Amino acid sequence: MTTTYAEAAVTPAPRARILRQIGIDTQYVLVGFPIGILTISLLSALFWTGVGTVIIWVGLPILLATMYVARGFAVLERARIGPVFGRRLQHPFYKKPKDDTFFRRVFTPLSDGQSWLDLVHGLFRFIPSTISFAFVVTWWAGALGGLTWGLWGWSVPNGPDDQDLPELLGFDGSYGTKVAFYLAVGVFFAGTLFWVLRGAALLEAYFARGLLCGVNELREQVAQAEAGRELAQQQKAAAVSAEATALRKLERDIHDGPQQRLVRLAMDLGRAEQQFATDPEAARATVAEALSQTRETLDELRALSRGIAPPILVDRGLQAALTALAGRCTVPVDLDAPSIERLAPAVESTAYFVVAEALTNVAKHSQATEVQVSVQRIATGLMVTVFDDGVGGASLAKGHGLAGLDDRVRAAGGVLAVDSPVGGGTRLTAALPI
Image (tube, rainbow, N blue to C red):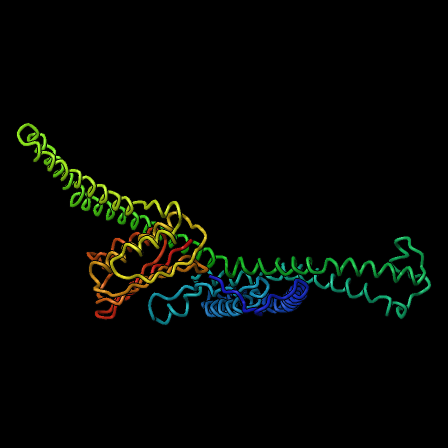
């Protein structure tokens, strides 16, 4: 992961940013050229001396010293290329010895791939460095020299056979023509200065980044991909678990409620059928009782349907659905749910079920006298908080009532936290991405 450099609270104007970047790119290339000469001179001498004397074992410590010198130059270069890209590059992974023996610790760099990449960069960095240096010096000289030629050009002595560039290109030799020509040249170099400097700096910086940070960045990308795959698998498992828990709860609720009433209804209607011939009054009473059972069954089915897909949530949104939930709760609810734009159905559904399950648990187990429900839209998503002043002791552990809710939240990519000390009430917080 990369870290952006700290900047001013107010974003600088485009002109200020361009001037700042010109300064960064210029100093990077101009300073990099002598560093490149020093690096190749020192590393070449050490490396080829070590290779030439390795047969008599003297070359091994020389090669080892070469690796450490190359690593030092690499650390310096990573610090230098950070401002060019506008972010600090992380230190790469270097191979560590598997044990603490002297030879392992001393000679591990010779078997480390990143150490060899540092050496390759040190030996060949002069190529992009020289190219970039030539462009930067040429463009700065053209811009400054052309724009200021009129101030000092008259002092340049010319012999009788000497000709200036304007004369060679067919312009007349008057001083005014020369000033105009060099001014135009200066304007051209100044107008293209930013882009040329930027390209020259990036040429050298990308070469360094590829060798000094490329393997580490590739390793981080692989790690992030693995983490994303693992997170996706966890969300899938959580979704399956939440679905299974919801189905078991629905099956239990249907079995304990509507199914029992329907069985009784069938028995009552059968009894009424037998009573019509012998006792019509008793039959009418039985039918009336069956009608009452039918209404109660319909009420229970409506309640169960609200738990599956509440129509008010689909039609009117999260705020209206939570208001209806708070009105049905047997414990007084202080609801703070400002009106927000419609979110993804999965996010709204998850937020609704978090509050619904929390209020159900409060009514059944908490012995609370008040519940506070808060739903806030934050920069990263939706924050849902439910706090009661009950007996506490709630947990997300398997076997507790909130375990299935935790699976539902994780399936939506969110995080559920419970703070419930015994006797201190319960605070349930769900953070959902949007």
